[in-house]
Amino acid sequence: MIPLTAYQVFARFSVEVEIGKIEKIRNEPICTAMQAPERLACKAVLEQSTPRASILHAMTELSRRDFAKLVTAAGIGANLPIAAQNVNRTIAIQVGAVSFVDEGIAPVLDRFQKDAKINTLLIATFSYGRGIAGRQVGGQPLPDHGKQEYDTNFYGGNFARTHEQYYAHTSLKNIQAPDHPGFDVLESVLPEAKSRGMKTFCWYEDVFRSDLDGIERLQEVTLSGKKANTLCFHNPEVQAFWQALTEDYVRSYPVDGIMWGSERQGPFGNAIGASHGGSGRDPLLVTCFCEFCKQEAKSRGIDTVRAMEGYRKLAALVQQTRAGSRPPDGSLVSYWRLLVDYPEILNWEKLWNDGQKLAYQNIYKIAKSIRPTLPVGWHIWHNNSFSPFYRAEQDYSEFRKYSDFLKVVMYNNCGGPRLASYIKSVSRTVFADFSPEEVLAMTYKIQNFTEASLQDLPRKGLSANYVERETRRALASAGEVNIWPGIDIDIPTGAEEKKTQPDDVREAVRAAIRAGAQGVVLSRKYSEMRLANLRAAGDA
Ligand SMILES: [Zn+2]
Image (cartoon, rainbow, N blue to C red):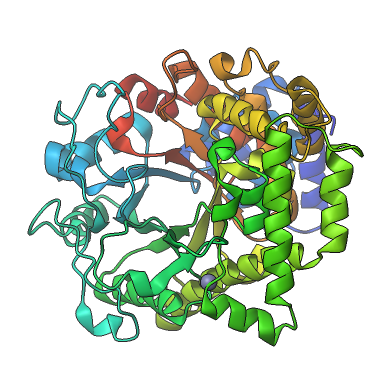
């Protein structure tokens, strides 16, 4: 779209006035009728506009929203401070309990408000993973705040109090995180956040450890018949667990919203290694082939024996192409032929996806049944930017049925090394007919962004332009669902790989806003962010 000029914005605006959309006409310049941030935006536009005298008299008490819409449509607000473009935007940060324990609640919230204009906390209330909970991971430099030592004894679990009455239908109930005894992160932080006008969301994710009481009953089963560390969405106890945890949060605490995430994909995507880190995946360990999944398959008329046979053949083909042996008809033809011969492979992929979708729906349903106005949204895994197979399965128009917002991961710095990792993996399986550079060129075409060469990608990362394009793409299919791009601040990368700089953060936040995002989520966790980079989000 060609950006409109400032004059065109005002011309459009005055037409809106004339056609009676705005009833109350006042003979005063519009800027004075506005709140401070919009007034700044208004003045900036006026300064750029030349023949304004003739339209100024028609200006009215234009609603903030209408004005913001016009400015956004014209792309004129792009160079203004975010605060000047929209005061209602969500500026969220992901933060774990350990940061409040280490640094104190008031000092952390002070810093969030002053340094980065944060108005929403996404508190990591449940995870057994180090990605969103705990301090900086080992092997990475500690940031310039917080306790200067690694929490090598991190355990994880529920960082709020666990209220037993909600967990009647699942054997997974002994989930209290032992990391900070007596500290309930929601009970402790919520009142202080509320008194400052900050919102508090629960942020919980699908990451478990295998030594938990009662977990075996809930675990997935691999193609080779082993128990996996992941939980099966077709197991009723797993669905009951997520419902219980959600009910516990929404009933026990006056939270302002919830966000859940599941960084997992189905057996087809995993078998062909279609993700960053995918080359290390054993295609015989794909999931799930437990009794619940077999039962679900039966009810859909899918032949389990054929599906498992298809997945074993797929595993053999993956092993062959990874070893560098080209099938006589080439790689793509051989993979495609297998899908035609064994449609059960994709049937099982859909079966797995439907289980995950059921978790989204159940969480949404129970949260809304308790508090119909509570915002409910999801973290969308980074693989969405890399694998077209995974992206095809993340249909935002489908998400509209059970989402208020989507935090779509657009981590641009670590996105470089991660995209390179994805390319290296799939260029040895389904796309083995092509060189890795060719697979990258094709991926850029498919995903509609263009960045560095494969050689430079890990060191350069992805640009703010990637963030802008991904934001626009998400907004185009999300309808009424708000899009809050996930912004990368110091997400760990390898020694020679891209490290976040203040400019990267500033430009990424600006790009998201320029594209029309209704918010941003500073990620992954405060305890790994350097302060200069956090402040850069505030500068944007
Ligand atoms: Zn299963």
